[in-house]
Image (cartoon, rainbow, N blue to C red):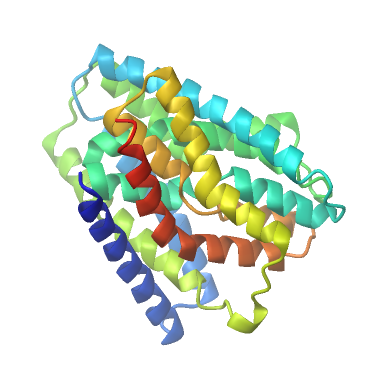
Length: 311
């Protein structure tokens, strides 16, 4: 796929986000509605997209690439965590430090990345994006949440494990792996059901993301030096770090491009949720997430262009 085609998909995604902002600004979407639609997309439509991606004949080569991708994703998290901690170790404000660390390390790969992979590469892209989802869910609910030390309701190790395993997307991955490995074919009516549900995921996700940007006022945007560094890490540097890791491991083509694009997605929305749970000031988190999302409309095509050097 050419850079022009990717840019076209990004423009379509931008227009869907713009539609979401327009709907919210017109008063047709409210906070509770957005929360409800977000849950529908994350916990119902996203698992359908993931499960559908495994509806294909078993291929040992694909399975081996998938395992290598999972390994590469975890290596990527290890490297970026170390780099981020070194860069932000002098930040004294614990609330801000947690936001900077989490925001720079964890991308919105599920809510924005999977729709992007689906739009660009169809079910093949979603299949390979699953490796990134596994890494994100495992790391975010263990290392990620641990950075917000002042949470009033800290999760036990068992609760964290439940959060990971019982996540509908992880359940869809486990079920999908079973039907992929054993080449199980679903009845035609179920396949059609999955197709209809999957097609709704991308537009709904982008509309919700766009609606969440409406509340951001220009007068409230104050990009400090540390927030700017976090933006550079999240949108530019860390995606390129992941690209180099994949290249060294020997992953190319759609698997590499899909994984890099998911790593290039903006700051994960959980940064706001975790800050709220820790009773912290969410303003830096909202600013970081919002600016990163807007900036990604430019940086994702750039990162895609960079992948062409390593194919």
